[in-house]
Image (tube, rainbow over all chains, first blue to last red; front, side, top):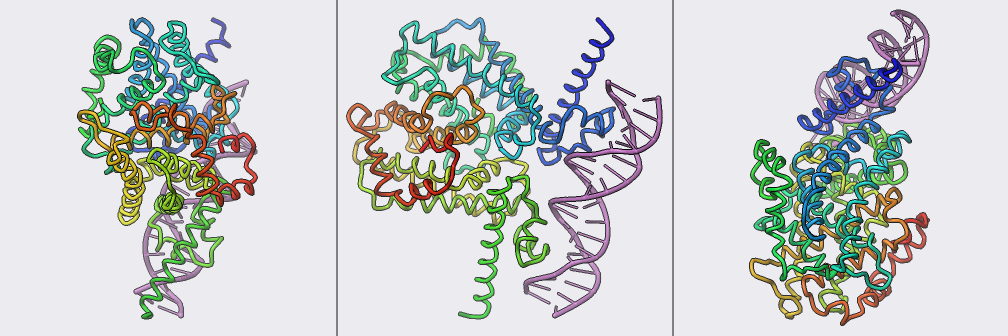
Length: 253
Length: 253
DNA sequence: ACCTGAACACCGTTCAAGT
DNA sequence: ACCTGAACACCGTTCAAGT
């Protein structure tokens, strides 16, 4: 390895180190506690060096969000060898998203916060480009599953209907439910129902609406969830057990 | 009116004035530009007085969000005299939510931002209580429609199924779609589809999944949307026409 | 070419003094 | 009882000096 390459690698590693520190601060003290001063204090570098990596505080936030998207990507990748029909694969993505929001709540918060234009407007072009590529990559997973279902004729498109519409429907529903559930403590209206179950049932109902075969009454998708937990996401199940999540939040898993 | 009451009224009015200023700042310069200094500069009072109303900056943000929820409530109220079946009423709520996000984008952003625990944790108890009451009031609208559908036997609950589950499903889907669409410029995957139409179709599919009568193939819900635009929300249609919204965002209406 | 940290401007918050 | 604005601590960002 040339000395130039070694240098570049060291710089990349340092950036990950800084992102990790930012993530830890958010995790333990909340988004408000994240300051450039704080990050500088917790690392071995100076403020100027931190600013060599991140053009501004918002840029750092998007960096944390992007790292989160990579974690989500890793969770998605765990589904690679999973045997099951397309609807089960889709449930796999949903379950991965749920683990993501529970295991990395601070990154999930960043992914959400970063949708704020006041933040996005101040982000460096490189970082925004990276975000775009990550989002496309994540979305292509869902699209691939839908296309598989179309090929297997488990799903068929109506007039003026496209695969990405079904993708959008599933995605927005999952995302919306996770955002609301993350704020669930304050939502009295949701009390008394098992939100974790609801999260999946809503998707079952939606995809039944699309007439995606096999339908709920023909197939036991709750067993699929159990199988996914045991075969694909057993490590995440253990991690959740170790994390001392308040019982109100645990209910969703 | 006693002098004490007059005083109290003046203070309430002043608070609304301050919230209005904050809203204007966010609308025209973004969430980042909102500072207590800025609000003080744009009003006739001192910093101390601003802090008499809002315990901290986050408290002001929640106040803006709450004012937004009231605007949403007003939009919901416009549906009071609307004649139509329960599914059409539900579409009315959805449409109201859509107008809200388009006509008051800064408040919608606040409602979303305020779901961030770092903000909620710093909010005064009074303000949080007000938020709770507003959310309950908004949610009860949806629940009332669902209960109406149950009474009319247009909808029936399965085993272990409750009205609020159907409410949560509709709500999270609508909310998730609006959040994603608000960030739609960056979502390449959504390009080439008519997001405004999709927004409603997703809900159609969901409620068909619930077997909510009349189903899509039996009833022209696109006509319902047109009717709602003309009969209930004609003022909002005009306002949207006057707002010079970039065409990419206009597509949704 | 990259790193440092002092320096600066700005912002959130407080509170003694004023009415 | 309420209002004021100076004062303070903290934070984001820059950049001249150093290696």
